[in-house]
Image (cartoon, rainbow, N blue to C red; front, side, top):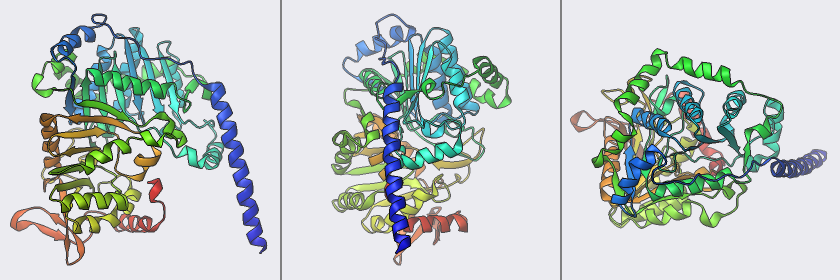
Length: 517
């Protein structure tokens, strides 16, 4: 009985401490918020991008231009080119920005743009910034750059204090900004699934991600700016200087470090690809690659999702009805796929009504988050039994590498779907509880058969036997088809995954933590 009272007392004291921490944090946020600022107005001829893009918009009145960016090397080059083309503004928003080769090369481009007089606003989620404050403070010290953090921790240097703060704010600290956008001069934007770091641009030593972005022109760019401004000025975002007032960044030292990257051998393929793209004008002149449509829009969670409010306008409420309305064909690509019972029922109903429903996700050996795989695994059998085709990405392509420069290991990171060969979505949204209820997400919804066909072509390549395993039920048990034709093998356990990885995923699958994954 005494133990029970001790536990009760502990819970009460922890609850009171948690309420005090939340109240104190709220007061701190109100005192520390940055000065509001908005996207700079565009004009017809002020910048090179104005002069390049305005005639294209006039030729496609009321339409947005969308270009699929599936190649990792091209994805790096387009971001670097966009920064080099900037003359007015760069508004950049990411879940994380790695301090590695490609992260450094792109950070150098932001600083170079600011040196030319470009206003740079950099918005990052705080969960992955631990230990990097000095770098961000150095970048922020540039008079043309401001760095802000989403849902930041007040404790920046003390690991114990940071841990205590996270424990006391456990429910709010799990809400993260997963958005990804790179907006140049209010004229051009890159929105999709990639963060900034080597694994997204084929430079990682372990595994490189397969991902997609869209290069955007026209009205959708202004929509992306509206989303950025909402987050930048929200109560969930604070200037990094308000969090680290006693610390200073050394911009000269950071410049020297970033400039040194240019002479490294590892940087040469990226600089060469940037040269081969021949600049923004050349990229935007490839008319066959740009799909013009009036049916395109940015969809995003509101910043207030960080407080658990605004549920009626959460992104999931927009895209799920579109998925449920498929009649002929539905293709889903999601690295972290936890459909839940309702999602399983929806997909089974579509398949039962005659639609071709296919899902591509990571295999246990390919995923970078084994915990998510453990939760996903229990949905495989009912999906397969209901007529849904399931594919799991191999950790390595058969007969080739996915990366020319880094590791040949592969991991899926694309978040996309297409419906009936006519419309689709590319963005940051995973089909899992975290994206639905906890993280903020954004992406592009489009209705364009040609672009949809291009996305479906990537999907077809990634579910091919060289890239993925096809799952099926054999005598009531899950089997993985390895290869095709007479030489195909049917595997009866998670392919290429070690025993400890399989055990960990199985155990996690038993735990009641699905809502946090």
